[in-house]
Image (cartoon, rainbow, N blue to C red; front, top):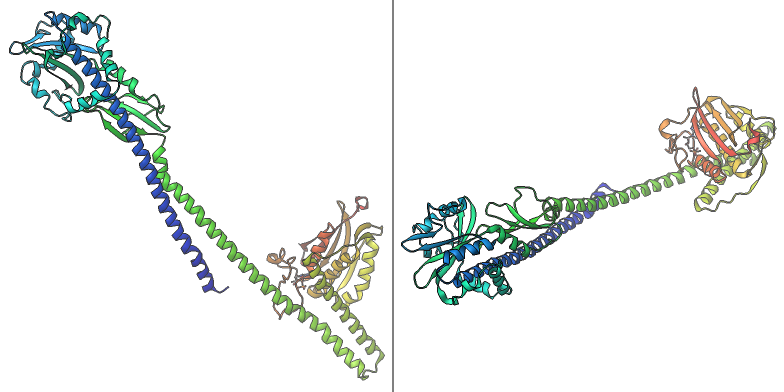
Length: 569
Ligand code: ADP
């Protein structure tokens, strides 16, 4: 194939492959982004739903407490509040505050418990009047955590929450907290409160929630501080029990600490959540967070995705390149085969031409009657016979080759006495070998060796090997044919003292058409078929043909044919 054609072929193969690869990569990436996006959206929706449920719960608890506060009636306000605080784990502290007069309970200075002292200190700004109760509601929930008030819940949100289902249940739960809550103290009608609200308050970054109501007639303000741990235990029941595989839903406080989580995976401390939904204004700075763990998103998207796509693309490109290389290799092989066949045709024609020229020349001389010497006449006739035999061998080889190639070669197995048969053939060709300048030595044991084989195949092999010795080792001066029986195989060695076969050709001389010198100007004519045919014939009858370089120079061809082991020598 021409170089330009090969380049064009590769370009035609690689350019579309590359374009398809890039498109496939882009498509995969878009698809992945879309899936990622959808996973994120659904996780965000779920987190929002959880956050809403938690907010409804907090709102309902707060509403319940407000309602209960408004129902407290009579003079025993402080005592009722204290009784309620004792019996209701939702209450952390209670207080009573009078406009102008200030805090009535816990009485500043006279407070008995350290918790009450801390309570007073915490809300000092409120109780001392520095921050008016009303303006507490004007602040926004998003103000950063500080030792100050944050907000009341906006009434709009509260109204919406009121519509949510489950509110009534939660309200009654809040009211009924602790059986000792005295119903007679709540005799007052609903409308006895003038104002009220809930104030999320931060102290040292910790959230506290204070609820207050104001009585209608005297403007007295009283209320409760919520115990957040108890509230949390309520919120936990609203949290989903499980999370989808590879995800964790968590409830985070203002400092990012995980208060509760759904999903089995352990989260490393300090791990940033992938999504967050704030719980403001009810629980400012608290968040519902979503974590994608076990590399669920990360593995498929980002690095993981790039690696996967890269791998797929590489496999695709490698497959194309391998396929292309295979095709190119096949094309080269076909070209080499075609070249070999052309050179085979020229070699065979050349080989046919030599004996034909001799036969014609001597036959013409004899037919013209110019040769009178009977000795010469006999010699010319012998040349004609020899050359026509050479032609027969050559034609036989070509015919055998075509039969073998087409799988039409038939074998006739028969019992053969090998030693006698070898003697017979070698004697038949002794003269020819000697005329080539070789001394033929035959080392064959006396005993008879019977083998089951194809007589013609053995003859063809022996003739090919003798012919080769004559062609390529005439200058070596000897041809030794030796027979031995080893391990159930008869081993016939054809040893000469010629040039031998160069190491790089030793395995290739058995391939069809292969010649060490395959030029038309080669010293010896040949078709490159003799050895390949000989090996194929032998292998077909369970034998083999091998080459071994001979010690001190020359070639040794080893013919192996199966024989009975009792002939072992
Ligand atoms: P051909 O003789 O027609 O070329 P063969 O298949 O018989 O084909 O031989 C293949 C090649 O092996 C020969 O071309 C020759 O180079 C090499 N060869 C075969 N026999 C001998 C030998 N006895 N000594 C050296 N080279 C040999």
